[in-house]
Length: 468
Image 1 (cartoon, rainbow, N blue to C red):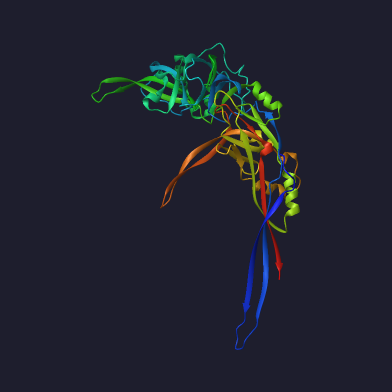
Image 2 (cartoon, rainbow, N blue to C red):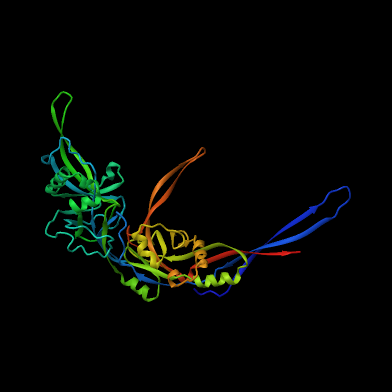
């Protein structure tokens, strides 16, 4: 950042308090008067500079049930492919009343794709293959995971050709908000799952037991085609079976039934196997020392925050009575030209580099001391970390500040939220509550963060009192 050094200024406000003492008796007394003048001086500095670099981020943790499937080659972005492995959480109760293994009809893998959650060509035909896992997935698991040895390549559960725009599979024509892809699995697998439940329902009540003792999960890969990546909100297994009953007049009756008994959930392991190769245009930008942030599994930005210089400035300019007011960090964003409409990440997190991996493993939330969240401001084209006061406060109280305390990584993330309602006598309102922060894998994203033009604003108040 090219700015003149030590351009600091103060905003001075004077608060004058007058204490007047009056004594009353039978005679005229004297009035004693003193003047105490308090000055509250607000000190601001916005001349701090940031240094940083774009770093590889090819290994991200899986902390989401969202799955990516497909591959694209986008000019200006690069090539991205994603397959996935997933375990399933079983329902604790499966319908067995008047149902036998002979009544099991079929089993389908159902991919739930929210409307518009794809990038690329909606009509290009693409294929997927489904294989069974043969052992439990590791945890934690990362995007560079190699599924070799974890699935049986000789046992093909399903081979499906699909298009996103296929009306026969697009339930929006019925008023729904998602598109569904159905892949038929072997009937034998459905029968085995039903028999396993009948033999030991306890294995289905606890996710770890179901995965270990009944069904480790599946591996899904793109087998055909290119030009589209879909975002799957949930994978589930749909069981079709016949159920027997007796009518009111005593006649036997049979009807078709469906049970969604197995689905991806946060309680079980699911992981996107992502491979990304950067476009030549982006490599050229890196060679020109541009700070690129690219997702998923692309590039982060590592910075050295000017913590030591800020601490020195504060200690030189604060008085005996001082209060930290604000610390904010704004970074301008530049879009990168591409032919797929790939935009900057909607949300980024700034976290101490030493804590990044542990943050996702432990499913932590931002604490405004070691980790901070910023939403992309599309109007002003920037990210703003506005709540950093507690960070500098903690650093000033720390006995020894090292590079680990001011080396941060800026990485794309997604916020997992739930909407909560609040009701009072006068009004009703809703608010989104953040339940989890996960690495961003929703869709390709990229931008240049212009650290040279970033702005840090640091303010504090100090009090100077004099008596007249």
